[in-house]
Amino acid sequence: MKSLIITVAGMATRFNKDLRSPTLKCLYNANQPTHSLLAQIIFKAQAFDQIIIVGGYLFDELREYVNDVFFDLSDRITLVYNPLYREYGSGYSLIKGIEAVRPDCDEVVFAEGDLFFDADSFQKIVHAASDVLTVTSDPIRADKAVAFYTDLSDTIHYLYDISHSYLEIKEPFRAIYNSGQIWKFTDVNKLKAVVSSLTGTQVQGTNLVIVQKYFETQPVSSMEIIPIRIWVNCNTIDDYHKVNNMIDENPES
Image 1: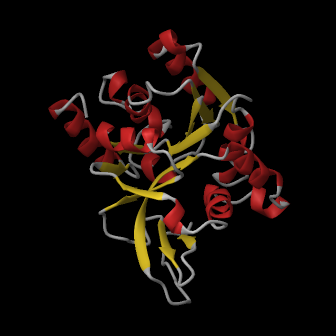
Image 2: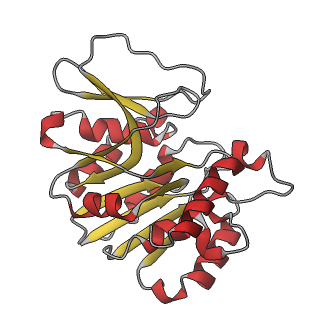
């Protein structure tokens, strides 16, 4: 059984600064509800038995949207509320999503909810036999990127600056990548054990704390690194308009 976790709880301050009224970024659309970021992810998730959507900010709007647009998937969609979306980092949304995974699930894919990506690349992730890290060809910039590098012992380390100022590596490394911010976990028991092992401080941190703890115990050679051909991280309204144009040009993307 396959479960997909999509986290959309954040307040998206960079996105909302260009709007007149508060908006949940994953639902924003150009008068076409099916052109939202969330809809585009769900359309690509046909292979999943369970789709877990973790919300927080403007949760009632999220619930209404899902019930209206995806009423036919009500038996597969699990809506989860993160009550600490203001106080805690993104990791708590992932924790709530993992807690909602059904007992018979044997693999989990986690995708951040402010992404747009092509269907072909996503299907490679879904059908991969091993754990998956995703990468993009975008430049690695501290104001936009989540990056990861491999050290001399073939261990991964994630880099992200919540202030969007700079990234720093203090040791030799073999490779550095721009993360596609989608991951596949094929050992669900291990994933749950990682969550159980978190300290109070780690529970309040970003989702990369959980990702790091899951993947750091195995060499990169045991995973599959999948490039995402079309990938946009929607931090701003301008980013979304690029996505909307791509949807208009190729609705099947």
